[in-house]
Length: 327
Image (cartoon, rainbow, N blue to C red; front, side):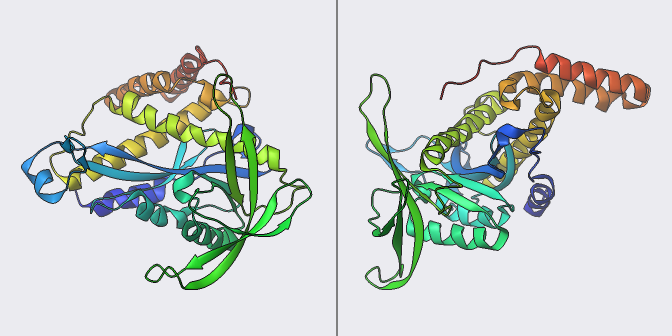
């Protein structure tokens, strides 16, 4: 099928789903929590893929398999993909992130790791956020040294970042101001380290520095989402597709399936159980069973029985809950 079909499907199907009343875990002080991150899928060594891709070189020579990069804008709490970009032409995670940034919804707080904690992305994200009334919380890269403008009441600082010409780095095109938060992170049995964050939330009264630092750890949910779609939903080391184009469609199908499962998990959780405590594998198994049953025998099942089956399915999903994760 043409790629445009999958692109259109993702454009229509992927969108925010969390409700502030039903899913409070997906919000912080009224802001919808989103995270941005990328991952790679291993491709098969077919003639078509080998001719169209280039393997990364390692210390031991070329990697065993070429990779397909995908970037996902994820709604935390529900683990629901809001947007995704898939690199069919070898695009980097950075380039793909620029494609999904325009899908950032209003009244959102976007979390990003150190790849995005640089001036160029901070500027692009700030522009998009200003257009829709959203904000960012990024882990700052160690390579960027800002200029301190002012120290705020809670110890955080207002800093100025220089926007440089990509072709002539010595030339400064513009400057932007962000709030920088520095905290010492200590874990039992590990050396303490400094966590440096940038945010466009400048007011310490409405966005306390310590709360933002603690909130940033929620970004790790994105890693759990990638693990779920790779190890539980996909279950294979390699994509099954024989070309780069069909591999991109396979990844798009995986992302779309994860969106379906996020909706069903949210329905099963209801207002009393955080959706993340319902095991992803359990939601997948029950949803697959019901999907196949309705697909093959839809015309034989009365609507009243369907409603009972769906409610029973949600009860099965809720039967085993994971323990709350430690902070």
